[in-house]
Structures are given as structure tokens and as C-alpha cells.
Length: 187
Image (cartoon, rainbow, N blue to C red; front, side, top):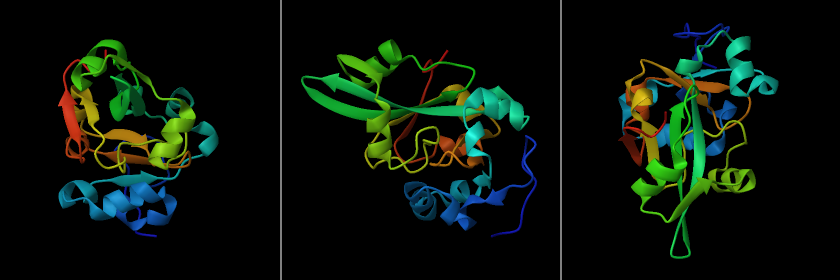
């Protein structure tokens, strides 16, 4: 494991360069970091080891002294149009809710949009429920990022597993493959 660095927030014992702890990440996440064309963004990602029993946002924020406004949730959405289903991911601060019925549906040009069932999200992403992250999503998926996330100095997201989290600058999240910063995505 690499040398620990102080985390930018929270009461984590230590943070580590995520590129150097690939075995602690879900496979798609480790691969995405390793192959991310935006090297400055990839090297900015930190990993913190956390208790998987405290992965739910409210419990996590209290246990690790993490401000909810610096935590973001990644949700998988299923958009339907003319019998075709398209999947996308949305990233919004934990203090907000994604506007799936209007903003996401309209942006994706769908007749109907809803949160994807848990089993579907887990199967399609190759990540664990409660740890789904925007890093390492399936190729070709749109990643809709709320503008508040992109503007945040640092944001905490899942690691692909319930154990551990990633911390990275908002600007780096906006540079992920397929990312589109979308005003009004969440409120």
C-alpha cells in the first residue's frame, strides 16, 4: 500500500492514492482509474477505508464526521422510449435529490425515466449496492453530474464496494468519460 496522506475532510485514519490500492476497489473502478485519459484527474483520487456497515449516507456522515454537502450519491436510471431502455448514471450531493421525472427524462429524450432496480444496477455496473460510483461505469453510459458536485472542492463517492470510499475534486468528476454537467439536475 502507498504512503498515507491526510484526507481533505472527515475523521478517516488516512487516505491513500486510489491508483495504488486497486485491490481495495471494485474491478471496473480500478480499471477505470488505471486507464483514465485525464491523468491529472486520476491521480487526484484518494481512497479511504471505511466500515461497510456504515455505508449508508446519513450513518456514514455521522460516523466519519463528513459534511453531507461534500458527499455525493450515484444513482442508476433506466430511461425508456419506444420500447428501448437506456441506462445512465446521475451524481448529486447527498443533501439533494435527482429530478428523474423531469430533468433526467427530458435530457435523455425518454418518454419515461425511473431509478433502475437494485439488481439491475448491480449487475450492469459490476459494483456492490451501496457503493456504486461514477468512476468505472459501463462504456457509453451518460453520466449526468449536478453542477453543485462539479463546483465542490472535494466530493466523497462510493468505491464500487460498500467498504471504502473515494474522495476527489468536483472538477475531476466532471472529466469522467461520458460526464455532462447539468444545471438543475438535483434540488
